[in-house]
Length: 113
Image (cartoon, rainbow, N blue to C red):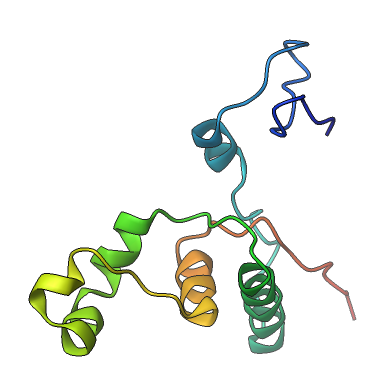
């Protein structure tokens, strides 16, 4: 996909128009697999996504959603007041949440035996 001057991918159906971040989040979602992932494929997808997140890739889940999903953990770590302003920083937990919500645009090539 070509890149617009703003750094966002261009919308090829409308030349000169960039897609907004919310539009990109709607487009980028996990491809429906042909069959359920094996535990090895799941580990590979989550591990690859966790590495991307740790290297600074944008998240496919919002900070607010992270706060909601990991609220109990944040409260136990930081207390009730701080839990409202902090969110989870562990790339593996974020990647696992994105996988469970089918937000990761990574899939494996199925090998038929």
